[in-house]
Length: 348
Image (cartoon, rainbow, N blue to C red; front, side, top):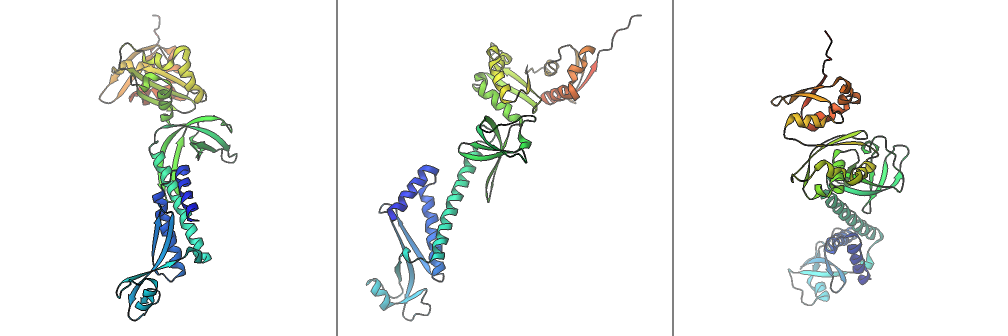
């Protein structure tokens, strides 16, 4: 039986990655708890010999002349029957056979062992995902809950909930489909780690570009800033450490293959990729894309404000629907942008 027990520990370590030493500590605690429950809180020692695949439990009793507490004490004559080398004032070890465990004690031991496995799994999961904070993870949609719209995902053999509030607005996930999620937060709580995942976080887009654009992955192209309104539009400012590299073209890719792959993952969300500039005027002009008829940009660097004059015919394009284009440009550049149309010249 003991050999099977240690074999089970081996399997547990291989399948779940739980160290045998950790489980042996939990098992020792379980056996001691079970024994004390049946024996009025007696002193106990457990020997777990992995090499010999042996488990032995002993009750410890102080050797005295006059026994006052039979649970904790034993007289010398009785102790010598157990071990002839026992002496007065020493400790006698009386082996206790696990087969003699009561039903309640056996249940207690089992509960402690199961709890130990759960704690180990929770700790491992927390450590695993703590290292994946702000990373992109592949997931499979396992189930959609129709009452809440939340999705149950399978991520690296773990099941996690993607809240409907963290989905891309307007997207409809289908069971069995492959998606990517962004790990925003990991909290280790008593009942286990809480891993928050998202598809609307701006970090998702950043990681998708790093995944699809080799020049970003190797540092040749740099994402300087990113502003996103999930489900609608994202603006990305990029630059290149190598003057011979076109950062915008690198992100778009041959025949738009790179950016199209990202757009597919984002459910068709629009993306404006612009070239970053250290010159605020140039940077703000680019940030207001797709508007192109930017006539003048007046910048106040100290107050981080600017006034932009555009062709009257492109005013609505520069501002965007419900002010979205101007709003994203402001977040991208860090400037408060006031957009005005160039007054039309009148014939005298």
